[in-house]
Every structure is written in structure tokens, then in C-alpha cells.
Image (cartoon, rainbow, N blue to C red; front, side, top):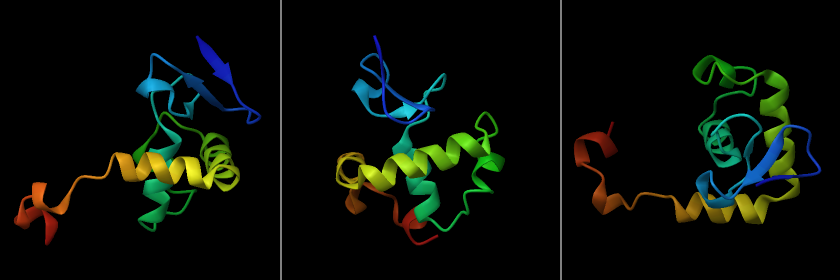
Length: 93
């Protein structure tokens, strides 16, 4: 069952990423958009790498993050890959 949020493009669906906030009609999490933004990619550039998203969806995801930072940061931390599991050739890239 899809659960709406106070944000136009952001929903939760227990069947997708265990209910993590996603962009409506996709499997793209708010977390993924925020992590991309944290890597220094501007919001305007994010749809270049995720062409199924519109700029409005990206900005709505970032707006959702600004209102739910603790929640999204918890998802980021929960999904972080431990450094000892990353091949040094990739980690040092």
C-alpha cells in the first residue's frame, strides 16, 4: 500500500525498500538523491545520472530531506558499506 507524504512527489510503499521514502512511481529513494547531492552533484545535474527523474522530483526529495534529516541520515548510515568490505583499489579511486 502506497502511503503519501506532505510532499507531492515523495511516497512510502512497504513493498519498495521496506517503506523507505521514494520518488512516486519509481524505486528511487530520497536517500539515493541525497547521497548524490552530498557527493557534490548539483540538483540540476542529478537527472543527468537518473534520467527518469524530473528536476521537480529532485528538489522535492531534497525538500523532504530538509524536513526529515534524522530519518534519511539513519537510512544512509544503515545502508553504508563498511570500509573493510570495499576493495582497496575501489576505495582509493
